[in-house]
Amino acid sequence: MTFMDRIEQALASIALAAFTAAGSGAIWLIRLIFTSKKQIELLQREIEVRDERRDEDREALNEVRKDVREIRTRILGE
Image (cartoon, rainbow, N blue to C red; front, side):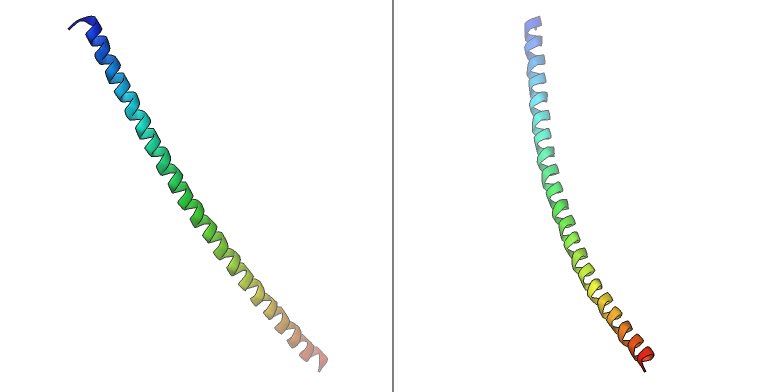
């Protein structure tokens, strides 16, 4: 084997390693993007659920306030 043959083999190995690294990086990036998208969707749904619960809690609190006012009016008014 001559020196040039060894250089050609080394270059081929380096090129294959670079191609493999680029392919692995692309796959990793795609997985990261899809994972992030799913996490964002889950977080958005969680926020929607929290907003619904908050609205329900506000309605319930308003009903309690109304009932307290009625009780106060009956006790103090009578």
